[in-house]
Image: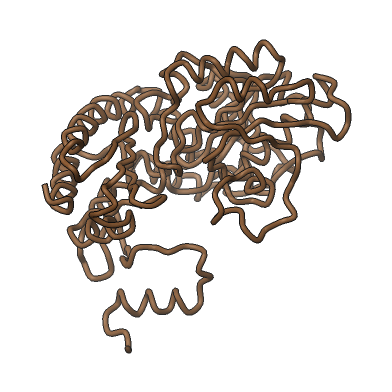
Length: 404
């Protein structure tokens, strides 16, 4: 059938010429502002995904756009062959924000996780004294840290892992939330434990009470690094700077991304102590675009906005409202379970009502954009700038789709 609308033509062209590594909803966004997006036909949609937390501060945030524009007029890229005048401030302020000492900037979240893996191994060999070639990192099931060959080597998601072998060795997978299993897996060759304090892609899975403090205890007692992947959960999403804070835990290393670039440019970073990140010497690791002037300028403005505490407070207050309203949906047969913290929720829909994809499509028809994951689960993660009235309107559409 010949496409007739702008949406149909755009989707048909994308299907013909773009690799099918994603299965997007059939909407073609043309512009966006705040928590709202507008498609090529002029229809508005409430964004309840926020680019997997990359858009914590909303679309077209004026402070971030102005910071980017000002830097675009000056210099955008030098490579790390030279110093530039935004790099030092970015590293110092991000280290201070995290309560740590050193920063290694990259671009994407997956690059940051790869950097964390390399850092932990090099630290294990140079500082801990693990014999060459034997460094092990303990990870957890249902993880999502990216899609590079090394990262999917320790994924338990068949879609992410199948047909990409041979796989990178050096990882042991234990059940998420099982502290005893994790403790048993840590041995003399273990250099790190790597996990998400809240598992986003898995459906916003929360750790059992006491689990993160237990991981901190085990890693400290055994002399291994605790690496917290806060790429989705960090920078205000849960109502705190980091999800680890809710459990009173400070890891040895933060892995950051997504919101750090304000939804404008890809910015990621590994943040740790001088002892850990000090293992690198020139030429041992790097990135042409990592820590570029444009990225640093945007990230510096992100950090300035976070220091006010305004966005964390909004996530806490609106998050309480969100979870109260979602909790009312359970017990009636439409929703099996709700999980999350702050402006972040995973909702298990009764499979009799449809798959997560089908629920997402029905919400799209009503002007709300969400993302499904694993069966009949959908995720909500609106921009932290969303208004309460808009949030309530989005929840009304969810109730309507669920027959409530």
